[in-house]
Image: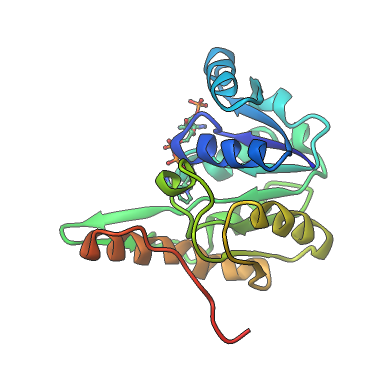
Length: 204
Ligand SMILES: NC(=O)c1ccc[n+]([C@@H]2O[C@H](COP(=O)([O-])OP(=O)(O)OC[C@H]3O[C@@H](n4cnc5c(N)ncnc54)[C@H](OP(=O)(O)O)[C@@H]3O)[C@@H](O)[C@H]2O)c1
């Protein structure tokens, strides 16, 4: 599978790219800056290009830019992305004194990203921390949601390379509202118990 990781210079995108390269996928790091793309690509063993070039000819685009910039970045790249499926990993958090809170918008970032793209948008990987992925596969399961079954199968195949557990189909793209909100829960668990929380779904 050919994958472009936009924002692949960040903590999450670069850790993700490392794991995908390990799993034998053909990975291109995307960045707004060609120098940053090339530097990260050299570190993780991938190719590095500016975002608009990175998406050319790939099977799946992972949108791993800074969360609040995800829908606007997708809008800027809509013509270059065309019909290619996009996996949104973004979770927008706000912080109060003692707690991380989900962002207030009733629509998820992934649904807002879908509004500006022609191809299908998936959402997932929200429970996997960059720091964990940087060291190897994440313990537990990975959840992916989306409305297009073919695109979701590709995203689940990618997700399965990242975790010790299963890649699970969490339903339609509207489930991204819950998955994005779950990041705040995981941040709070990590703070409270000083751990690296992941998700493991039981009963399936
Ligand atoms: N960190 C985690 O543990 C974690 C876990 C699960 C999901 N996520 C999600 O993964 C995504 C990336 O997380 P991160 O921690 O790696 O984020 P980050 O370091 O804040 O940003 C990632 C990359 O986004 C690009 N970027 C920054 N501002 C931008 C803007 N205004 N417009 C376009 N691109 C911009 C930058 O790349 P260039 O400057 O090279 O273009 C940056 O390296 C986020 O959506 C986050 O919610 C993170």
